[in-house]
Amino acid sequence: MLTKEEVIKLLNPVKDPFLHKTLEETNGIKDVTIKEEKKHVSVKLAIGKTNTAEQMQLQQQVVGILKKNGATTVGLRFEQLPEDVIRKYQPAAEKEKEASLLGGNTNTKFLAIASGKGGVGKSTVTVNLAIALQRLGKKVGVIDADIYGFSIPDMMGIDHRPQVRGQKIIPVERFGVKVISMGFFVEDNSPIIWRGPMLGKMLTSFFKEVEWGELDYLLLDLPPGTGDIAMDVHEMLPSCKEIIVTTPHPSAAFVAARAGQMAMKTEHEILGVVENMSYFESKKTGEKEYVFGHGGGQKLAEVLRKVLGQLRLEQPYEEEDEFAPSVYQTDHPNGQEYHRIASKVVAAMDD
Image 1 (cartoon, rainbow, N blue to C red):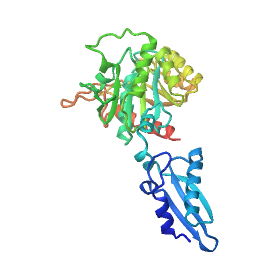
Image 2 (spheres, rainbow, N blue to C red):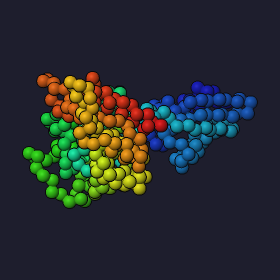
Image 3 (cartoon, rainbow, N blue to C red):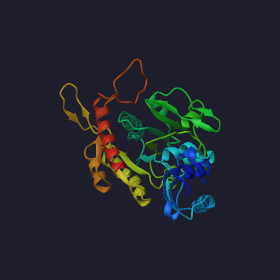
């Protein structure tokens, strides 16, 4: 009768049908039990994918090997290998598919930052929310999807362009955040005069042709309003969640509601509203002055969802050794508010 050691020796050369590596290489033989009186062998195997036709073929192969070598009956159980083992031995084609953010096999969470109109600070919110998430220990990327009005590289003080490695574009990294933008691919701030379909292809390439690596969050700075690019994003990323940015002015909140309604119609969950330029606080008196009106964010939240945060009208601190004109420092009042917003986003996205 076969011994446990003999069974392992017989099955070690058998290849996993998905990873094309031997069971010895993947450590796929998890348990062997022998019942000598009945000449019964029970084996537990771990493979790359369970409950498939390939598993059935493997089962027949293993049963044939063991019966040929003295077993009367064979019992088999299967489980899936750990993710790190699968990733290690995954065929290159499968890895490439997995690496694509549009492949559906990613743990990356998508978050779009939208607004009803321009000039409300949507890109500023995108940049600082991304950095706040990174400060919380998250791996973060940003797509500057505002293709006509790209501004994120300038806001973050990025002065170099992405590199190309093989067939992949390597995003620029600053403050620990990976960034890709149309601004990297135009010369001397030239205007973009492409039509909608061409822009849609460029946006798709930002997902498929950029080597993002492992990301916890990918933020998309959408163009204002409800145009072609915003619609393309809604179609490409059905699981994307959104934050709507507005100012306190009632008219800004009114048009922002349109962007929110479009998100809801395409079944995108709105996490909440960020009210930018909420007030100016006098350094002399400490009094708040509501320069752009009062209550627009709250009114918008009544239509959509809660207010995630309110940002004061104030510039980042000046730093001689680090040029990033729109990035708020951790000890800045707005930096602290972005930290609170990021914490709320993490709680909502992980829920």
